[in-house]
Length: 269
Image (tube, rainbow, N blue to C red; front, side, top):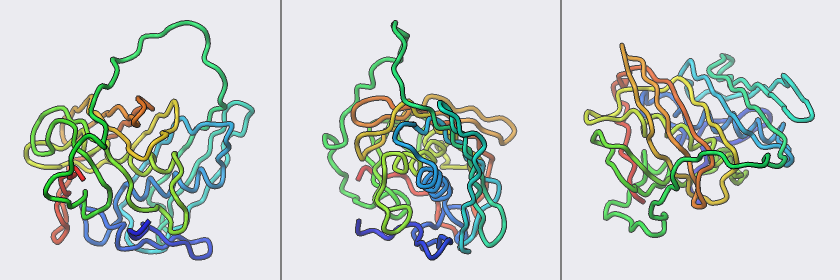
């Protein structure tokens, strides 16, 4: 992977790189790298191939700067069928975010049929030609291929994303880290409007019934609501073989700090 990772690991500390910069303040990290690092450590320290990380919830209550980061994990429950692990994102000695991951043991589906949403019939990433403008989302933080809708209008949006950077240098993506770092995209996908993105998400919850099997992650906006500057949004999440789960987020009306670049419209490349 040629692109600079979001963090380097030195001892027990994670050092943010310039690639981790977020859109709201030029001196703060992007929410997706916070979520990605918490997911990375939860899986690295507590993952088990017999279990699937079925739910990851991350609360983000303070924008971290570029200080060294420590992630502390705590086992809440370690049972035969359910494991619950907490993690805390500590930047410069201050708690900035926390996560809870619920790991469920793999087994077999019960007999019978259950209603499912219609099949997601969309072009695959390889079938969507790249645009003339080959810049990637937010200065190359990810690659994307737009399926339908725009990020300057009020249509329902569908898009593919692919990670182009490791979360931690020297640690290739796993299927879980790939979707964990991507799931923050549920916020702009659900909340951007014809005046741009005016909401900063304070949390994300990712639900998975299976892990992705491909590098491309698909998002489809299914809900947005906002009152008094508080918004909720939901997206279905896919890989190239079909549905894998959904992502939900809450958000607050937010103005960007002077000097921060506007959130880039995800390109199709």
